[in-house]
Structures are given as C-alpha cells and as structure tokens.
Length: 107
Length: 113
Image 1: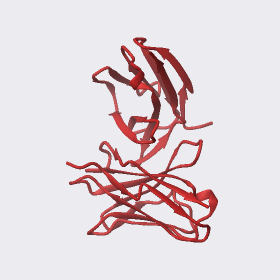
Image 2: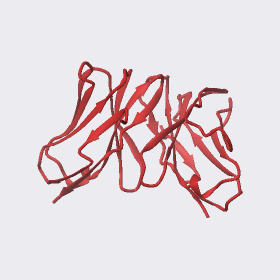
Image 3: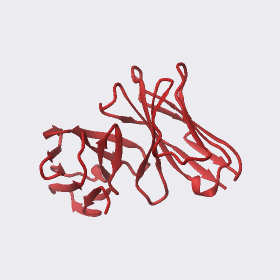
Image 4: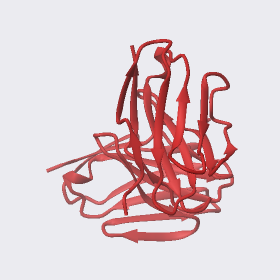
C-alpha cells in the first residue's frame, strides 16, 4: 500500500464546475503539500499546510490531521486549470508523493 | 527575485557517459532537494542538501549517483556511466529553511540513448 493515495486518478470537468481532489496518507507527517504540474512538465507549489485550511484565489486546501486526509478544491474551474495535481507528505524533511490526479477542464 | 534555475533543460547522453545536472536555488535559500520523475511514474525523493552538507541521501541509488552543494556555486547532481533507465526528469527544489515551502525548478530532462 502506498503511503500517499490520491483520488481520483483522472478527472474531467466542465468549465465552471467545483472540483475536489482527495489525498489520504498513512504516516505521521510534519506538513502536506499540494503541487501542480503543467503539461509542459513544470511544477508549482500551491499549498503547504499542517492544519486547517488555506485559500489562494479559486483554490482551497484543507487537512484533517486526525483522519490523515486532505482535499484540494477548485472553484469555478477553467480550462487553464488543466494539469496534474500532486499531493505530497513531508516527513523528516523528505517529501513522499502521490501518483497525481490528471484534471482536464473542458470549455 | 529569480526562481530556482536548472540547467541544462534537456540533456542527451549515450550509455556510459556522465551527466551533470545543475541547480541554482532561489536567492536566500540554503536548502536544496533533488527529485526524479521516471516516465509514467510519480516523483521520488533523491537527496536533501544544505550548503556543503548532505543531510539525507536515502533516495539516491547507491552506485553511479552523487550530489553536492558547495559553499559557492550551484548544486550538482552527477550520474556516472549513465544507462537507459536513468532517462527521466530531474527536478530540483529549494527552501529558505528546512520545513518551509519548497520552490521547484523547471527540471532537466535526461535522455540516455
């Protein structure tokens, strides 16, 4: 069993839809990261959180430490949000990555 | 403030050659991390360095791979005697302190012929 499980693996949405990507982990962590990998391969760090909730623009990330679960929400999705979204957990300064969720937002 | 720089962006090597990948962290960042993304696979941690120190190399293959982060200059990931299985995207990230947000470079795509 992987330490970090993401769901769904693939997600197709219509423009404007509310999107949720889930991440579950099995180990104690110091922080959880959400990353975005663009079709060209570049990686952008979206959020780093250890408790509660963070919001940046149309993106919201939440984490429940007791349940070892995090969600990434995208409100009013847009085709430019199409990318791979990766959850990663941090333990002892080392990141362990989920396999990613391929999001496609159709116009 | 320039982001994390990696060069080259693309590198082609023949089997048996050496590959040197460079990473210049963001200004003010003294912590560097290297990750590898094999084709159709997820990212995997390789090594974590501070200036002149390797903090954690538990993700690095024991042979042919080495990393350094000298007092001056970029961090270098060195792969000796490359094999086809080394073909991957290698990403570097940096942070100001350990445990803070890591900022990723654009990656180096290594292709071994």
